[in-house]
Length: 526
Figure 1 (cartoon, helix red, strand yellow):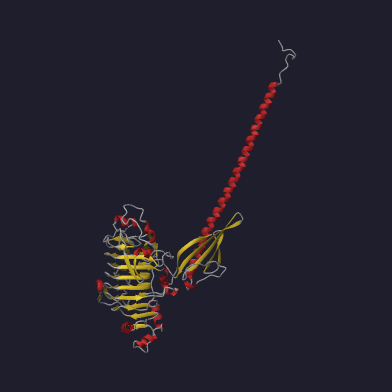
Figure 2 (tube, helix red, strand yellow):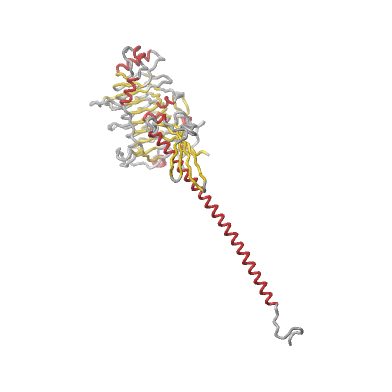
């Protein structure tokens, strides 16, 4: 029966109202979802835009860095190409070049390029790249040694060999100075003939002493350690001892394309060998561990293309002929008409006798000697702070128990750059070799021989046309660098046996070659 008060067949409105409410709730939910999605999308777009902006800036920063590095290399090339690398400089405004979608400006000893040690060139480069309507910049600064083609403390075109219980220290000149520890290299072979060879072995078990011009010191002080470093000299596994950080590299050098230097292992670059084995040792770890050379400390082995270097005899001959600084000394020694400094053997021997009998008088400048020179007495050619370069057109021999001293004034830039000993060899080799100490047979090829118990105290570059031999109980105290050429003979470039060699590497000594510009250090500026 129909409900009272409601006409028959009339439908209720409450279900429709309920559906409308549900629709409203659904629309509200959809609206909220749309708003949320819109907010998230806008946020994501903003984040993406921010990331893209950051990526663009980072890309510009990276580009500006590499553009600045290019500018630094361009500055180095500028010094390299200069007729006088030591005097090269840019205008104060620098040199600006477009490159890689940006540009770089470089300065050489001008504008903001300051701060390197005397004798070094200060190079600075500013690299710029565009991003988001502005320029992103990176600034780099480097110190370079002008006229220095390579950074090698000891180099032999032919074989470099360490024999017996030899002790060799390739230390930096001035702890913390640019250039670091001395690198060792060869075009042919670096041979470690026995397990007693010591190279940069710093007081491994007890304190070892070395005697240099300043006195007798613990060997580790040469490398800047205030006290004996504590390390395991016979590690059972790598990592290698931490003291390797102060040592130099062993460079398996390779001449430029087209130049061939024979190697015992047949590789295009120098071999590192042990004893009579001709197998190339691949790295420092193998040298120390697999070949039991526990007393050899080098930072790493690497290959590098190195330009062959040589010195022109005519240049030094001309320098000596124009050197009149010894005219008064020549007169006192019995040569009143001689004003130059090119000497025959007889003339030089008479002058050295005079100097031995008159302490406090010394030779000066470039001294050129025709013939093989035998230092049969203890000689000090230039005094405690001289400027002598001894040039020998033959072989040079330091007699047994004798001392040859050639010191420079290392408080000056010229003192660092002046060569010490140049052994050029005779124009024509002798047909019959002359026996000398240490079993050496000399032909005037330009060989430097230190006899048993002899001593060399020298500054600057030591250059030989045909290598150097250091016999037992001899000692070397040098600040500078060594470069030993080869004159087509079978002689090794450098041999030391049961001797002590302390070579404190001074990169400026290599400026005698007058080529290139070696970067010693660089930094990124804020």
